[in-house]
Every structure is written in C-alpha cells, then in structure tokens.
Image (cartoon, rainbow, N blue to C red):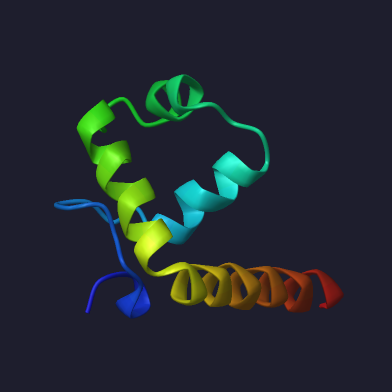
Length: 75
C-alpha cells in the first residue's frame, strides 16, 4: 500500500524503479547515496538485487512513470 504498490527500499517511500532509473541516467552509487543520505550501501545492494530478479516489473514501472510524466507535460 506504499507508493502505489511499487517495490520500495525497506522502511522508506523510495521506489526501487526510481533508483534504477537514476542509475540508468548515469548516477553512481556514491551519488545516489549523497542524494539519499538515509540510505546505506547495503540498501543499494538489496535494490540492485531486487531489480535484477524482477526486471520486468521494474521496467514496467519506469515506463508507466515516464508515460505519466509525459501526460502531465501535455497539460
């Protein structure tokens, strides 16, 4: 029931797809940890493992959020 049902980092409201998207845009793990100081390196290890094991789910969430952002830009 958190973040529309998207997978999130434990005890946060940060969706896995968002961090994967950041990484795809060229952010390093170090930069992500700077941007989210309450996350740990272990959190990112878990995020990447989850994303690898559930790549279709994550790719779909990224697509859906990109589409929603484009729709908002059209208004």
